Each structure stands twice: as structure tokens, then as C-alpha cells.
Image 1 (cartoon, rainbow, N blue to C red):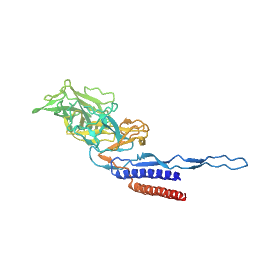
Image 2: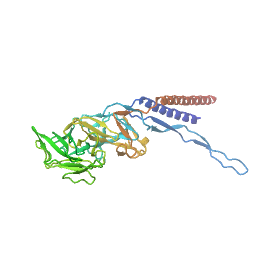
Image 3: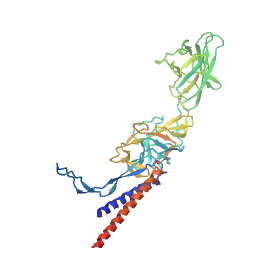
Image 4: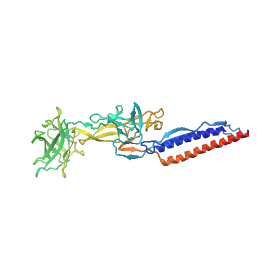
Length: 432
């Protein structure tokens, strides 16, 4: 008789736990990055009343074992690791994980893992969770280089970070000069692009391409830089550029030997006066290899030849930043350039459901989760990141409400078993 009481009480306890889990899921239906929990029931050791017997040849059939169950218990509470809906927030510190993986956070020297990407910047410019855990990753060097082979550390986005000025050392040409047959009025093409000295001062560089009168497919190029009320020449003698008449590609540049790939590097050995350059600094004007998308050509049609890009930059102050899919935080500076500031780390586990739930949407590794495999987003089975967005809770309210009705019915049925067994026991007592 007491067996039914034991089984019914275990059912009450198990379904109470089920209701607790359901209540927690519903309470966190709007919690960023929350993963719904699901209890798994397992039966308790059954009481063996009789064992099994094999059939006796020609005498009797076999007999199955007889056992009565002892009830139920919650064997595990698992996390549903399915993707929650992504919602755009346009907050630069918000980040959503698309796919597998967890952000890595450090709190009081203990490493935790979280899917909650509603991050903030603290007074030190460190990226942190809402509970103050410091987000881990790799900080970029002064030149925007990130070493992901180094140990992870705190990700910092300092307000007012300054990008240092870098002196220009090379300019890149591209585009098309109009086809020149050698007859008629020689065309002249001018292009200007700003370079920078070592203090970040602007150095306007102008190249003037002049077709050589009476000589087809041949141009001279003069380089000038402002020098007070006049100009300073980059070359004492203007170099001559010859184009192949059949391909329209650069064939030769006077005084310059083609590089191995067919490109040309036209050096500027005398730096323009009036600016500050590093000791021994030289410039070059680079002509891409013939046949490439950006090669300098001489075709009939539109004139597009220009100085397209240069290295070097003026100083700039950090104005905004974004998080890329690979976790790289790119800063936009007042000089119009972008540069990596840091990169967020992601951790993956062989068994994410084995993580220990430490509250505050934080998890820690357990003996059954496996060790954290920390790396960059989009590699090693880790998902990608979406900046300015958050992953919503994956709780399905319709499912939870259905589960709540089922748990309630089971709970009430178990209490009915207790009540019925109590009545039967009372009847036995009264018979004495």
C-alpha cells in the first residue's frame, strides 16, 4: 500500500520541479540570450516481485518478470541551445551570436561564458556585461594589428583614442589616358591627391601627364607640390611613359626597370621642401602590373587616369565603432579612416548542455561540457557575430503554457493517488 504513496509523492515532487522550470522559462521569455530549460523525467528503481523463467520443453511456457515501479524523478534539466530571434538595436556595444558559441567573460578572476550580448562600456572603457564581467578578446596594436594567437585579455575601447599620423611613402596610379596618335593637339591630363608628412600635415601632390607632340603613345609626367607661392618639382627631368600600341598597356618608363610582375615603381628621391618627413624617407608613384583591373592604360574613350590611393594619414580621433562578423571591432576616426581596435573571442564546447548555469546568464565549464575551445568567430565550428543586435530568448510561450497544463494535471492526479491511498489505509485501520 505504501508503494503507491511513495510513487505518488515522487510524482508530486517531479511535477513541482517541472512547474518550477516552466515558471522560470516564462519569467525569462524576454531575457536577452536566455535558453529555455526542459526537465527530463526518469523512473525510479522498480521493486521486483517475481523473476523471469524460461519455457520448459513440453511442460509450460515462459514467464515474464513482475515488477512494480517506485515512482519518478527528474534525471536532468537540459538547455535548449537553439537560436533565438535576432533583433536590431543599433547600439554599438550590442552583439548577437549567430550559430554556436559563447562570449568569454572574466569576473573576479573566474572565467564565464554567456550568450547575452547587451554589453556596456565601464569607466575605464572596458567592454563588460550588465553584471560587470569583463569581456575577453584580443587588443589591437598601435598599427591595428591583432594577434589572435596571444592569450585573451580584456577588450578595451578607449574614448577619444587617437590614430597617430603616418607619413606617406607611396601613391598608386590607375585609370585610362586618352589614346594618343601623335598628331593634333597633345592632350594634357592632371590629377591631384593629398599625401601626408610625418606630422600629419597635408601634402597636395599633382601629376600632370602631357602627350608628346608628334610621338604616338608617349607621355611625360611632371610631379609638383606647393612651395609657398610657387611649386616644387618631384623630378628634375619629367619621366617619359611609353604605351604598347597594340595592348594599350604601359610598356616603359624612362629611368625605371619594370618589376618582376610587370609593374613599375617610379621613385621620388628628393622630398618636397616645407614639410616634415622621416629621415631618409622617399616617395614612389606605383603603376600596377599591365592587364590588371587597376592598370594604367591608353585606350580610346573616356579619360579616367588619376592618383587613386596613397598610404599615410593625418592624425585622427575615434568617433564611432562597429563589430564585424568575425568579432573585429573597427573604429572610425575623424581623419576618415577605419582601423581595428580589438577582436572579441568566442568559446565553443563539445557539449554545451553540460555547462553549469551560474545565474545572470553566465555559464561555467563542467566535467561533462568539455573544455572551452576559444578562438575567433566563424572558425572551428563557432558562429558569427552581428553588431548592433541582440539574440532574444528562445522561450516559446505557447509551448510553455501547454506544458504547464500537462504538469498541473499530472500534479493533481498524483495528489488524487495520495488521497485515495489514504482512504484505503483508513478503511484497513477501521477493520481492526
